[in-house]
Length: 175
Image 1: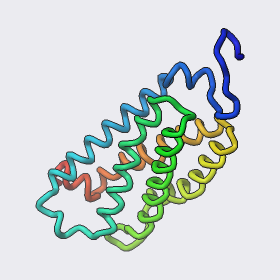
Image 2 (image 1 turned 90 degrees about the vertical axis):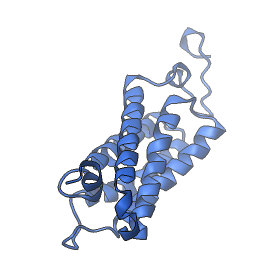
Image 3 (image 1 turned 60 degrees about the horizontal axis):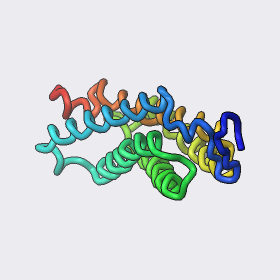
């Protein structure tokens, strides 16, 4: 029995915050993930005339990234620590890893890596940290890692797919 009559299930890592639901940052990150998802889907739809010219690896990258973006608010806003959260968390983690790996095969027009590829390395290191923290019931570490990945690898990286003549920006803005 925890403070204030709230039962803490330490075996499953359920905390009082989990029982209360998402905090303000988690609600905001979920909302921003949905906004990013909507903007990317809009860009892809607007670029439909060029779809046939897009390499399969780019389509795979978009699919894995959209999967992670769609699952983000679900994982942040629903109950945590149960079997469904774990399964969806593994799917989200796999999508993040696949996105990071396949991004290494996508290069700029000059054939070189860009600054955004640094985030791919970050993801390849941090997703295993995230999974290990969850499996060892280190909820605080897990939560901080999730937030860092969402902010850095989904939202910041997602934002930088629009400027500088990148494909999604071209499709969205027609430039």
